Image 1: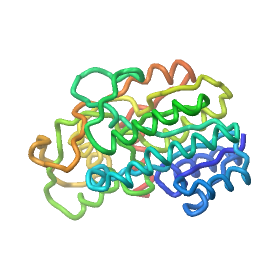
Image 2: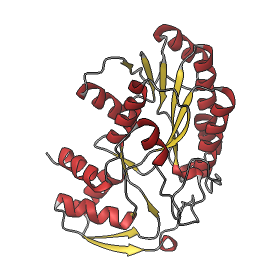
Image 3: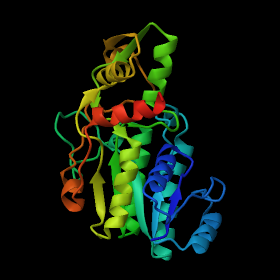
Image 4: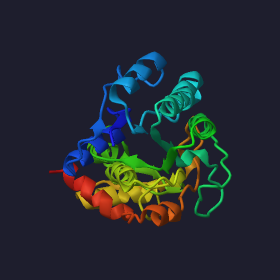
Length: 284
């Protein structure tokens, strides 16, 4: 089950490495950024020929949501063209692709759990380019799993949890948005889900939703981080209008996970339980 992990140095890539080590899994390959550059087709083809993967996990993405509004071309190159490059090579080398996408492909203006076949109407460049990447994969490669996730955090890389822990020490008061609702996702849980899919041997290809269970605001998330870590800081809830950003975010992007739980028999952890685990690792 030789598996190639692209974007291996990012947050999810590092989580995959950690979970693989914990489970004594030795079939994952983690090339460095220069060798696994998804925009270098010739170099990527060389890598595929060398590794001969049965599975490819694409964690590589342009995720600077606000910056993407100004850097449209580079965002599209990574999220659309890069995804297509990988899909075409997977087809050539008979590999199954596991591609990571996002809740940002949805407009998020309806307070209902989002299903895989709901209408995608992105409201940001980031969301649009991730959707374009999905569409190119679907059009060119039958053997794919597209996993949409949301609000990723972990003990690796830069993320909301680590930022809040840092700001909680540096500041006395924080203003956090309270009218955007979603599901935090511990990237270690997502990594485990990806490996479960590969190890299952099932070939139920298609689009799936995966995030931790539950629905909260960024304000609730911050409050929980400080409560669990014992950080003393005052947190004020504010509306999105009080904190304007270049990119528009979905107001409600809680995803229905019935499909992935049904097909793969997964138990999805509750967001707060996973947050406790992460903070314990960060504060040891």
